[in-house]
Image (cartoon, rainbow, N blue to C red):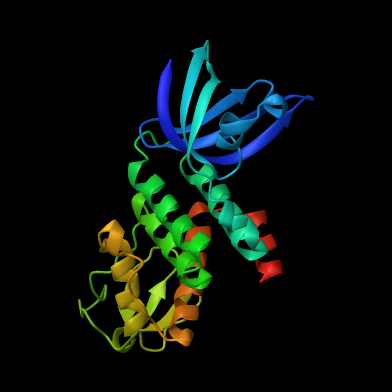
Length: 247
């Protein structure tokens, strides 16, 4: 028997009564759990195994499968369901996590990132554009794709007022060094955006949500973060298309 805390990323109905759930845990990474008689389960156990429920799971392992024995809710994130855009953005985050964490065994930082992001998303205390950019860039950093944000790759300048970010490798080049090169695959950004990227990928987890940008700079940051994630994961996410359709 295994006891672990995790959050449900996906539910899949099997037959008339059963379902599988994918949960992200700290110690065991991504786990697929069979829930027998799911539609008959009421009360705490039923709510604990629904989408976006953060719960304490007690599971049995038989052969190569995990089966739910019992579950106790820690936080259900009901507030996400009050907004189509919030629940669809959470769905996008969950799809990205299921793909990017499939091989991870130590998922503590990623789980914490997701829980903190959902907290702010549920409460509505941070803008969705900001939360999405933070989640995308910090997730990339936690899973081995941190952008190279130390200095200009040519001259080493630390705080250029204007620079070009390469989407493919995450490095940047100051405008002086970039000159009149072909900018295909690059994004021109200002120092405020570079500073925000540095904050997101380097700050302590509890501080990464604490920064402000102008609306224009935030939109540039959001475009860079999304492009960087989709480029490095090399995957199309239908949930992202749906989120765009409702915002």
